[in-house]
Each structure stands twice: as C-alpha cells, then as structure tokens.
Length: 272
Image (cartoon, rainbow, N blue to C red):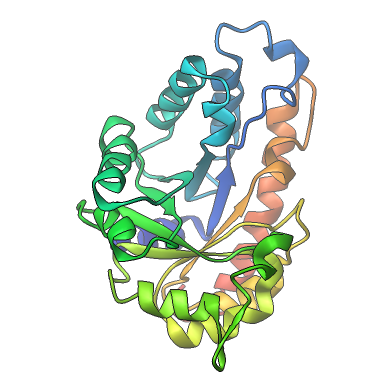
C-alpha cells in the first residue's frame, strides 16, 4: 500500500486506529475453541466488527509462530481475509545480515502479503535496506519502545542525544517517508515532540494505548502532522473487551470510542 492511499483511508474513515490481532489461544472465548481454526474464527469476527472503524491491522507473529504450522496457517488466512483497503502489519521485529533480511522480506511481503514489517535496526543498514526494496511495502523500525528495558540501550546518552534519536536520524537516511515508519511507544508521548523535529513527515506506529496505559490525547497532540502521520495501535483493550458470545460486539464498542476520539483530533486539522 502506498502512502497516498493510506492517507486517503485515514481521511475517509476519520480514523488512524490500528487494531492489534495479538490473538492468544488461551484468551479467546471458550465457545470458539471447538472451531476447526479457533484463532482465525476469532480474528474473522474481530475484523468484521471493526473494519469500518480502523485503517490498519497489526499481527504480532509470535502468537502465531508459537502454534507451529497451524498458527502460520491461521496467520495467512487472517491476512488474506483483511480487506485490501486496510494496511496490514507483521509485527515480527526482524533484522539480520542482508541475505537473511532479504528472505524475511520475501516471507512477509510475498509469501504472506503484508504491507509492512517491524524491523530491529541494531545490526545496521544491511539489515534494514532489504525491506525497503519492495514497491509499496514498508519497514517499520523500532525507535523508542514502551517496555521497561528501553532504558538499557534506547535511552542511553550519546554525546548530547539519546541513542534512540541517533538511530532514528541515521535510519531515516536509508529510506523515505514513503517506505519507512518508526515504532514509538505511547507511554513515551512527551518524547514524540523531539522525534518530530528529526522526522516531521514520517508515519509513526504507536503501540501502548489502552492496556499499557498510553494516552491517545497526548500521543495525538505531540505526533499528528499535516498528513496525520500516526497509526495508533490498540490490541488487548479492543480484542479482549469481552470474553463471551458477544465478544465481537464489545470489541466494536471500544473501537468506536477510539475512532470517535480520533475524529475529534483530526477535525482540528485543516487537511481533515
């Protein structure tokens, strides 16, 4: 998916919501567990309930890889079921030497047709650039994450800057705003202002709103740009809003709340 079409979808739906399909077999409603493919059946109902409210879906591949072949099959069926109008993210956090990254890119852009994959930049340019060689596909590079361990490396001082600032600045040179995004945790909302000085026009994928305690208002205040420039992900807060036969309706109700709030923030921008 190219940038213009993604922006079009955001404007049309008045939403920059990304629904995280981090589907844990142990947490889905009991009545689905007798299904032939319970993970896919759960995802299918969540997608049906939320597709008009969001512009993207993010699949954390770990929840599928843990189930072996059946998990991969459920993931592939889920990606194929998501409408082509929606931006599909493989949250796989890959990144290796060039020839290995090329195979990861093939896996997530060709074998399973995602639009984007999250990438760890620690090994440098040759681990990221293979993901940037596919037309209308995106690398989403880990910038500043919400986890406690982000203090170990990401927030180390390098001269006058933080390491995450140096990583973002350098990585931005390898691609463009048309094929490169950055992951910034919602609990780091105040740092988004300084990040926007480095990459004013790039899209940011923001996980951590909802169950992790991030503030949609703060993220939007610091992160919105002229093209919106944000994909805000909510996973557990939406998909596990209910745990019985009405789980999809309850998930929709939470997604409506997010979309309504996002519509309000977008209305303050002339372009929207």
